[in-house]
Length: 342
Image (cartoon, rainbow, N blue to C red; front, side, top):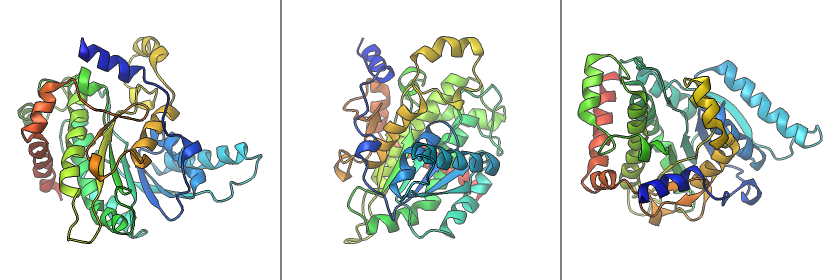
């Protein structure tokens, strides 16, 4: 019964606790939003644009990203009486294809050639509900390969610039935000992530075999990476450097985005009345990136829609795994996979 109540509270959450109205200026800060050209990522970019931030929209398609950037600028001007927004930020396309591990280093290098710091990384892009057989360029199961293995490698490549930003920022201000989902509670198998099963899928080269299950595993994997990231990055590289990072995971909510593009029209017709627009998911991401409720003392916390700290997960099997070191095991598993391709 408690699990049902938890799912209900996440599916039908209270109003956002942090919105653009309470967001301060972000001049001088640098952000990356993966998958920023659509859905929640695009909505988050729109919220941040007036703050003066320097943003990088990480996307596979330059054409789609540049069209999205133009829409952000044009929409802001339209809301400002047809005039450019004074003090607005900048948005730059950044190439990123999480389907191919061999491109992660070059994507991070693209950013490093242009910036000397990174204040917040939103690992927002991902694969959801992909068809049976979906796999990455390296033959990995698609959901975990994209959402976890590639995302971790990309983040690891950016760690030095995150550390540099943290050293000149208030404690807890420099963050890595991972994207969870209600699928953690509702779709993932016992224990959250079945690594022997994933090893078999990867060895067989057949890709995704059970889309809901494998998507659920990838979202638990993102939660694991957030917790383990908090453990590994949440301390200074040397005493007095002040370069510790905050790593959190967030369930943005039941949001109507292009992530559902693989679902049938009938399914979406039934589901859409219970869904929220992308802006609501962006409020959760905003909370994850900026809320003063999150800091070194709450590093690794899981955030519920539309900006609440989870006190206790009802998936005790997953919690037990976390307590017994499964986050470290999964992190190492991801690293062992991507080392063969870098």
